[in-house]
Every structure is written in C-alpha cells, then in structure tokens.
Length: 204
Image (cartoon, rainbow, N blue to C red; front, top):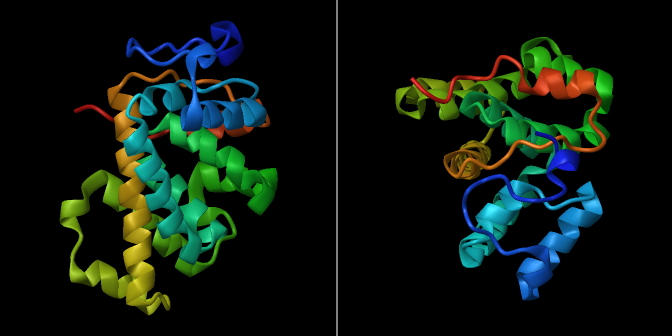
C-alpha cells in the first residue's frame, strides 16, 4: 500500500508514537522526514520506538560514511541492500543517489551495476558489499586481495565492510518489524521497479 493510501499511518503492528505525541528528538526526526517525503515513513516510526538505539545508529552511519565520501557510500549501500533483499533501502538510497548519477545511469546500476559505466574498482567494491549481505562467512583473504588489487587500502576495505554490515542491521531490523514499503516521491515508476526487481530472497 502506498503512503498516500496510508495517510501516514504506520502499517507495522508495532505500536509507535503518533506525530501528535512526538516530542524532542523524535519530533525532530518526524519533521525532517515529513519535509523530505511529505509523510513519516513506517520504518522511521518503528525504529524510533527505541530512540536511543536509533540515535546510536545515526552516529554510527555518520562515522562510517563521512570518510568514505557520498558516492562510495551510496554504491556500497545499494549493493548491500540488494544482497539483503531490502526494498525499503533500495528505494530510499536509490532516491538519494539520483543527484549523484542521474536517472539514466542509476537505472543501469539498478539493473546490473557490472554493466553501468562504473569503474572496475567500484564494481569490485559493490560485489564485495553484496556478498557481505548474502554470505559474509564465505569471504576470505583472497577476496580482500581483489579489493587491494583495485587500489583500496585496508582502511578503505574496513569502511566498505562496516557500511555494508551496518546496512544489513537497518534493513533486517525494519524487515523483521514488518515495516511498510512505501512509495517515495521523486522516483519514477521505471526506476522504482528497477531498484526492487530481482532482489535476493529474504527467506529460505
């Protein structure tokens, strides 16, 4: 169901704080989302039930993303969300990435990032991030050497791994809480479809 049909009401069965009752930092987060999207997404409502954990998540992401740079962070996030089968995060970060890549290239990235005009290093980075979501336990030093061969330093590799693993935390938490996947403004139907098709299964 779309956000317009929901009229902003959370669809998860988790009891959340209504906008009319939100105060302090929660009220600020709700207001920021309403300004950006025109409504408060269900995933914000359910994750801010534990406001302290949500704020810790924000601080963690800031510490990870800042040294990476926005382009690298968003590519890693899109790949990790693909591996996790997260429609929520693919849509949200696809929307954030339009200004970085333009819709035409982002469509190509969404369909197949290996054939989207990215550098070899970026493709290797995304393959690694997607594998973290799918099967992190299978990764060996040989996989890290592939990244080193593309010029990534060990600090770069740590940051990529942290960004992908952190995306799994958020993606899987909102999936586990049955948060509604809402239509987001600014995404064309074609791009939304490309971002959410052919995702990894989330159940056996």
